[in-house]
Length: 86
Image 1 (cartoon, helix red, strand yellow):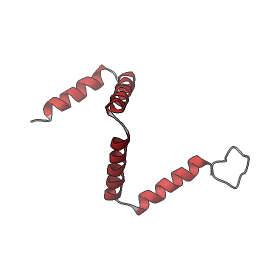
Image 2 (cartoon, one colour):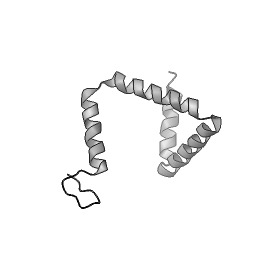
Image 3 (tube, rainbow, N blue to C red):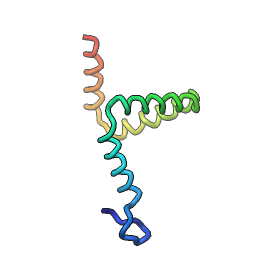
């Protein structure tokens, strides 16, 4: 068990509680549950954000991807995309 920052050894850290809660949720719910909450989250996000929000997160995601992957990665996904219509 992880210790928290308050030197109180009988309590779990927030990270440990979150991990355990996530594992319990995973045991108690199926794929459809996660699809439903994902759909609801997507709808709520769409209601609360505009086009610029999506452009910004897309730009940030593209920058992160280019920093973490090399030319071979882009060649591979291009090849897979080109073959997807076959």
